[in-house]
Length: 313
Image (cartoon, rainbow, N blue to C red; front, side):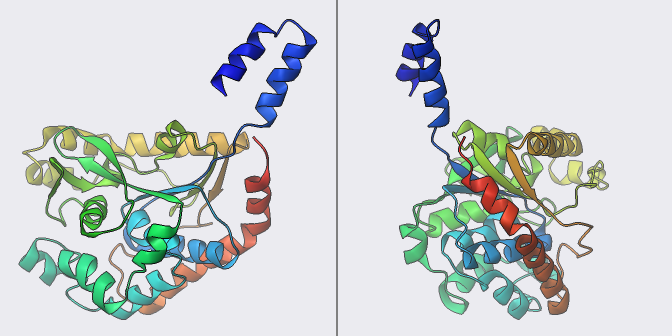
């Protein structure tokens, strides 16, 4: 396309050149991307949205998930409707899944072995075959402890190695051990890039849907436990600096998302009001309530979404 565009520019002084440019613009490839914010159990909202997508044949060329956006969003690539809400309700009270006991005994609030081994391989099987055959690209975001920058990883097989990257993406500061893999020391992706829209744009995704787990009015405030974060992460001063500025980065990212939405370049799905759910919610009724809110919101917006995705670039 680049060569054709340059040739058209050479001819741009003529009607033939203008027609060539217009033709190229009209025939640009539409590359559909899906961006999933994290938020721990606010991710039940996202799970509800994604199940409606699957039930109605809504598809994308690529998805990028941050933290819970990755751990729950992977079920979108494996095409497992209802899996995320099912296992969260079933195992919410299992101390190996999420508990202070797990934090004290293993160093992880969300038990690494239970969440990334027993659960997908024994208790509620993750469909690796479908995941690997689905052509949709799937990425997760983690934070590099040493540089204080985001790291983006394409998860092609969701094998044991990929699952460690996914765990890194969801390893919340103060509640998880640092994850070491591929020469990196990693923690939660939301610390450095909560809404990786610009990352996907850099890959050529030009028709993007962003699922947020906070309402439009939400503005992030400075971290309330910054003193504790400084102490716990004192070996990683650049990551501490990233956490100091996290609210500024997050608010800038949401402003960018909504500005692009106003131009018609991005489609946003988010709760109408705060979800009011704990990050470590264990009440199955509360999990179901937030999941149902995601389903309701997605169903309501489905006609507009289809129109947005079907437009030419």
